[in-house]
Amino acid sequence: MSLTNKVIVITGGSSGIGAATAKLAVEAGAKVVIGARKEADLQKVVAATQSENILYQVTDVTQPDQVKALINLAINNFGRLDVLYNNAGIMPQGNLIEAKTASWQKMLNINVMGVLNGIAAALPLMKEQGHGLIMATDSVAGHVLYPGSAVYNGSKFAVRAIMEGLRQEEHNNGIKTGTISPGAVRTNLLSTTEDDQIRDLYERSNQAPNGSLAAEDVARAAIFMMDQPEGVDINEILVRPTGQGI
Ligand code: NAD
Image (cartoon, rainbow, N blue to C red; front, side, top):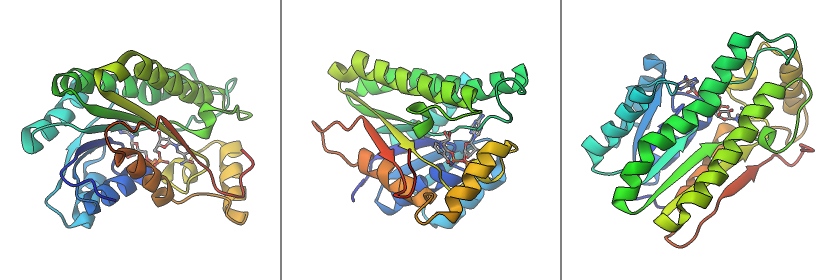
């Protein structure tokens, strides 16, 4: 695949799907800017690519000014913005009844407001350019309800609705949109969750043949979406391991 000279900003680029996508994008010739909260992790991703075509900025996606600054870093260094990949996200800790309001708020702020903050920062620039692709990592949990996962499900259904609304509003203005919806992926998100049911799902899916995805599997789908020529618009990709029923 060739993303030669495309300028791509990825949130949540310090680990998992975001880091794997950043690596593949640089290998495919793109200029990449990654943002997440932990500087040491961002530095590791940048160092691992051994390329001058990747920059990072410490970014909390719940803070609109920080998301704008991340995008400005791409514009100031690479001259434009071809793709914004809103990928940052977290899993809820505990089910609907047990979880605390603060944890719902935190998750909705990151998973939903983070995407909206990205759209708000990127869209005016892309409309001025007359082109651009805005993506988000959704989830199979944006399509199917999981027991004990109501708030995470709600956040991912919301992301899908927002991205579809954006497509309807902006596709006539040259703006493409797309969601990547993975099943269970072997990343920190699942391995460090304190939610017993989610961890159980993760462990069972790891034991099943072809039961879970690697971050690179999802990254390849994201790169495929970024690599489409003008006039070809792929709005949604579900990435599921063969062994997973949903
Ligand atoms: P991960 O924990 O490895 O990566 C999450 C990334 O988001 C990290 O870089 C983290 O630092 C970043 N992040 C978290 N809060 C942030 C904030 N406030 N501001 C900026 N960055 C923040 O997990 P992952 O699996 O790679 O998750 C990436 C996306 O994939 C998430 O949106 C997640 O919901 C989605 N997803 C994951 C799975 C899975 O099974 N792992 C399945 C479907 C969807």
